[in-house]
Length: 369
Image (cartoon, rainbow, N blue to C red; front, top):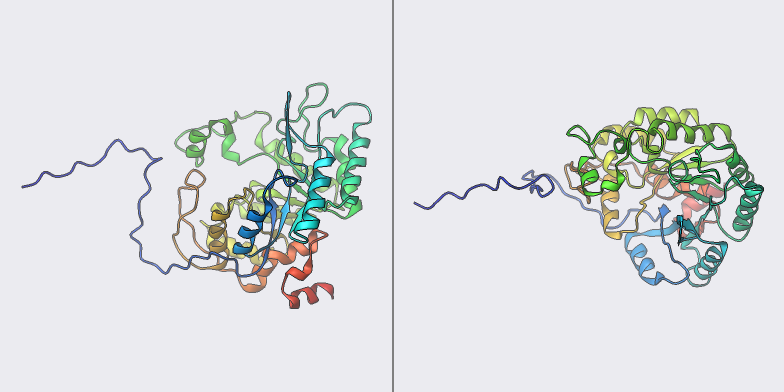
C-alpha cells in the first residue's frame, strides 16, 4: 500500500487561498455597462508619462473620463513629500487639452508647507483661485492633513484648522468640489491582535499601524472632517473612501442626512460593500444621488471587481487583494437608473468641466433640462 501524503501544517494564513467548491452562476464583468467617470484617479506625472497606454486601458474598461486628483503631482523635499508648483499643473492641463481633450479632468492640490507664516492663508487662496481659473475643476486634500501636516511651530494641523476656512469657502464661491481623504481605516488605530480584521494588512504593511493616539485618535480626526462639512454648507465635499464608514452604512446614512453638502466616493472600499449586498443595495437606492464611482490606485485589472459588485447578483467571488479582504464578494445588482447615477450622472452634476457629449445622448438631454 502507498504511503498517505502528510498534510502541510506549516502553511500560514497568508498562503492559505482555497479554491471554492461552490457551484454558482458566474458573470464576470470586464467592461462597465455604461461609460463612467472615475472621480478618484491618480496620474502623478502627466507632463511626461505615456498617457496613450492609460487611454487604451480606459477605453477597454469603458471609462469615459478620469478625474486626476494629483494635478500638481509630487516632489520630494528634505522635510518629506509635498505637491509640486503650479507649473506642473499648467503643463498637465495643456497636454491633456491638446492630446486627449475631454478624457481627463484635473484637480489641484494645496501645499501646506509654511502654514502659520504671516500671509500663508491669503497666498494659498490666491493660488487656488488661479489654479481653478487656469483649468482645474476641483481641489483634492490628501490624508496628510490631520495626520502629518505640521505648522511653523511644529504642531499638528487639524482638518478643521481655522486657517483653512477661507480655502473651503473659496471652493464654494468658485463652485468646485473638494474631494477629501481624512484618516485611514479605524482598525489601523486598534490593537493588532486576533480580533483585528486588518491584521493581515498590518502584518504585511507594518508602516500603516498606529497607536491609539498617533497622531491623534481616529475619532478625533474624523470629527474634525465633519466639523468642516458643517461649517461650510455652501461647499460641496466628496468624502473619499465613504469616509471609512462603508462598514457601517447606517451611520454613514446619518451623516449624509446631517450634511447635505457631503457626497461619498467608493474608492478602495468595494470589499466592504461586496460583503453586505442587501444592505449596500438599499443604501445605494436610498442615497443614489450622493454616491460616486471612484477606484483610487490606477490598476486597470482591479476595476472588474467593482463592475461585478455593482452590476450583477453573483455570489461568493474573489476580491483582488487578500490583505484588504480575505472574504468573498457578492453582487448588489443595482437597477440601471441607479447604476447610471453612480457611474456618471452624479459626477456630471457635481464636477464642472466634464464633457457631457461622452455620455449617452438621452441622459445628456435630461441633464440640460
